[in-house]
Image 1: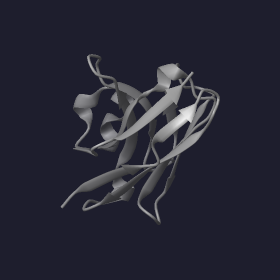
Image 2: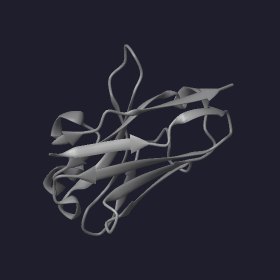
Image 3: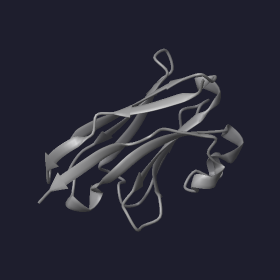
Length: 126
């Protein structure tokens, strides 16, 4: 059974930090890029960041560039999202998803992802 399980969300004050984890199982983790999305009720799911499978190249939305860092540990089948200098507008449910390498160029689009986690809530207070 394919599983992607997010953890690490919570409540933090503006300017603070959180580290999210995405633990994967049930598929060949090394063969997939992993992306992070966030969703706010009434808005479209937004691509936040993505890390490739082979060379580990990273991609970021402009809104988080310089504040968020994505990394992966293939030995642990886990991807991390370090979020610093958090802002109230970062408040959302954060979800991770697995993406075939051939679609990395379209990493911002939710429809290219094969597998999804359930999400973890991040709330940033002002």
